[in-house]
Length: 377
Image (cartoon, rainbow, N blue to C red; front, side):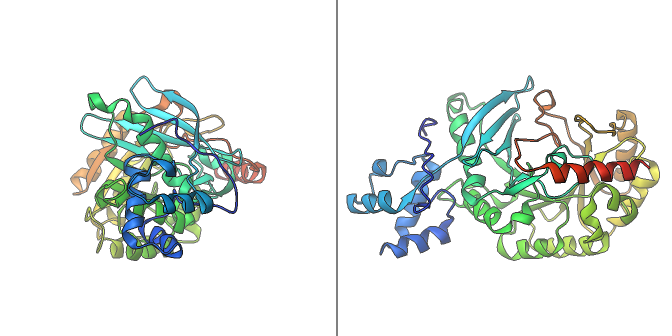
């Protein structure tokens, strides 16, 4: 792979092939009078070999390569900045053609490497504990901008792979944005992540995290059943309405039913529920007991997330003693409960800290801070 081989041609008459999954690529090649195997060849060149110069695709005919030059392009995002944490976490600020920027984070561990990918420029939800929510919302990412983050990461990490200390084994759709509110491009990108001709990840190694867009959970089950994580953060509707406002539209009873239905196809056979630990807000014993009751009929794993502070927040993280007590209550209730290790917080790359550079965000910021004042009152 060649990290220098990045294209920024924005000719609107050309089709960007970077984000086309197998079905999309087959349809495109059919318009050129080509057979389906050509689509798979092209996907291998782009995603397995990292080649985005049609002239280098040597097993395609010269005539086909020329038609691709005339009708298509391979435009990838650019890396605007790279920040590396003292713990090895790498955060890339990814520049888009329109001037917006999103953030992508790579988390290395001994036996795996996880890439956290963004799906929107900013976020249209206003979860009060999340820094991304303060940035407002500009637009959905296109399919090539989502999978482009994986392409960039693979290229950037390739120089380290000789020592096998940087590898990509897992992708989590947990970056900026709510992925289920950008459904089709996200599914197209995830199809490439699990395609053996592209990145070849097992379905259980691709995880989508949602705040609870119930209708789209059902649709995801049918179209791309990968691992599912749910940002829960509260055991009851009253509290969750305050800190995860989408709960007002899709309350917990509806969300739990969607989760139970999704378990029929979930490759992990459990739903991971993410729970950020906010001091004196959602971290008391009765919250843990309420959580046990709420999840009694859902095969679950709970991931407790120490709150990562950001500028302007009034929240503070629960003490480790309180988190451990909370964990013990859940474990004694029969639910596997882990505590997420904070990674990349010194470069603002930890959970809830991603901000990017979002255009046209003023109105969303006003709504965020107005809601925060309401909760405080």
